[in-house]
Image: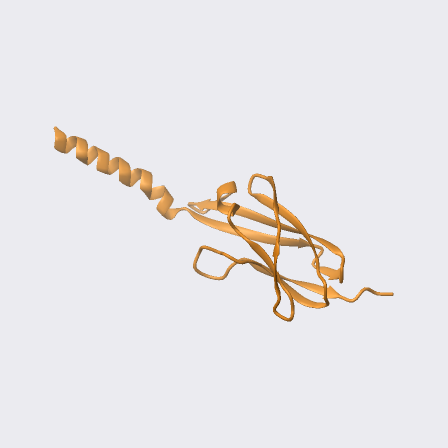
Length: 127
């Protein structure tokens, strides 16, 4: 009888643990607009998803600890403060201080492979 209980318990542990083994996370960065003038305020958005069996759902837990950074053309790194807006969505603003191609990236991407990132073109204001 004890053996049957142990087998049932082991089966339950495997079944409960299996979904978490296949679960993943995904994130998407967006900048609006993607071509801006120097010192123009830009909205940056991070969307974090949990992925289970190829189904993506906005999820707070996956994005809670992700850090977003702006990297200048010269290589300077600035952390961008984001605030939680709704489930799985964080937003912040930033003013790019110089012209060139800046990179927005998730600095502490926990998965293998490339971290989510995008490029923003910053130009001198037209007169």
